[in-house]
Length: 289
Image (cartoon, rainbow, N blue to C red; front, side, top):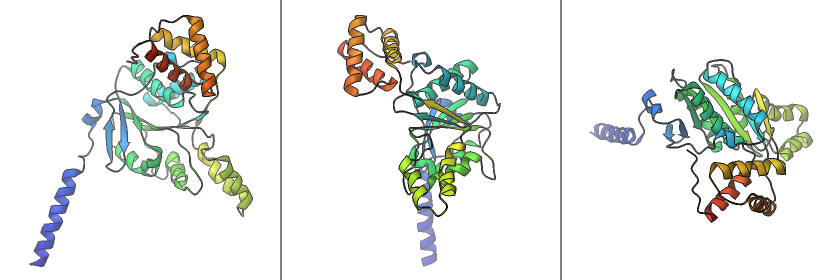
């Protein structure tokens, strides 16, 4: 009697779990969007209604970076050899913006929707093998995995599993997946963490090499650096033209420079924040479609 009751309870629990868990992702589910966010707790690819990105022509001062990333992404989309990419450098210099804009550029070139952009959050990197096992089932689509602001702090060991994943391990990396990461750190580790290994490790050179070698798993490193005043103003002018912000050029220039001084930086992000501020003051609508 008790066995039957226990079985009944277990069946109820199993049925309840089946109802709340999302159904397996099918190829047709990927047709509804160009971009998805991986939700690790449910193994779900959440579709993005509209990817937050800037037209690639508005990304000024990044011509070498554009060329490298466009070529690599195009090769990947055309089933040619392509590398995982680490985009590293100063904050607000356009790293993640470039990935999203290049994705749209390649979609326009290919005139199809088979190249998908999938974002995985930095805290979910430990679940990357699970995501790869999902994506490898799809034969038609190809996937750019984007992890924004990837870095590792003292005491974290997640980077060890990431190293083997980037190399593909014994199974090999799926042919329909490429991994793009942005970071403020060239080696993905804080300098003091590396220096601490140098001073405390029994074999410091080997320990340091293990940590630094993570970035070596990326076939391409693309550097981003602080921009000059001229480039900063060029970005401002491009935005103001794109969004029909009707202000005197000298006035706009003076306000843009004042804005950068108060922020203590010149970058694409600062320029975008300034344009949003000016657009609000002049009642100008910004439409990135």
